[in-house]
Image 1: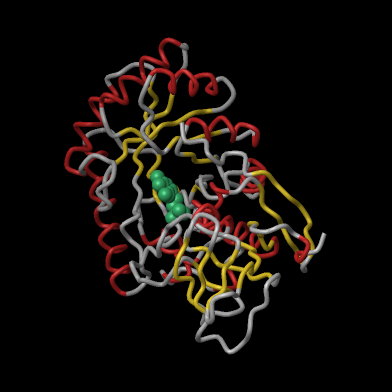
Image 2: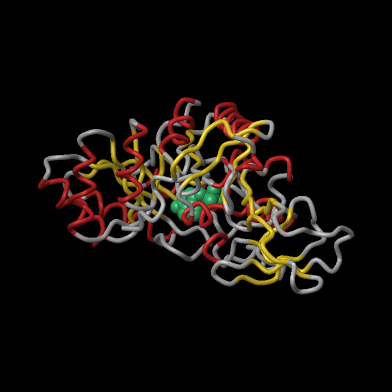
Length: 363
Ligand SMILES: Cc1ncc(COP(=O)(O)O)c(C=O)c1O
């Protein structure tokens, strides 16, 4: 099947670019002796996860137990749930996986650690724990000053294996001078954290962090020994606008069809909020819902459920009903969650189609 024969709207991945992204980050991690435990929330596919493992990833990262269940198909030796797992039923499901792979959970509360410890005891398992520490995002994670006391409280609980610390530097976005200054600060803060824990006899074997925007600066955070990027597999308009990749590194786009040109200066695409999500750019810039690859002067102004409104006043060309356009999405992870399958394309031909198996696995 040719690209032009794909039914739209559809997520299309340029396989050459994706493979280059996967190989490039695998090599970066290897060159800098960083463990790579990629976050699978972006591709949500065990097929792609397996390729990451084959390229040297030490394990996989997920946010949800439902994602963990799906990722077992990729047969990882190691699985990190980098999200609080709260509630008996979820922990029961997680323990059911623990017989087949080494499970680690990031925790930032004694309540979560207690529940995990109880579940592990009931199932006669030992589960790894990473102490989640907040390094500036102010989302989850204990304050660095409380890390020693928190770690001691958690390690008093049975059936938990101390793996180290985790952090997510999602507050570092733009790779400009401000971003570089934030990375230098992060490096100092992580070093102090590790020093404090080491002085208390709690030297963390794993120091896990690493997002896509700051990915290639991970080795400047000296104490870090593990990275968990997710978005890097495809990149997206956010990654591009934040300055951490180029257009040639963006593997995923949404292929749409122009379904109406009835309004002068406007085209309607067959993809709206159910295709793109309503995510704006992470930079905060009011720059619409995506970029038309072959018509960057077009402005993707508005979404209804099944309609994408594109202002084409500034375009030098005409658009016809039935013509296909490729749109670079603002945020690829949420787009993947909206689609059942992905078309992998090379040289304009569909080479493979894979299911987005972990889409909707929110529980
Ligand atoms: C805990 C955690 N680790 C890793 C990642 C991956 O970061 P990125 O999407 O920038 O690659 C995320 C992304 O949301 C995350 O929440």
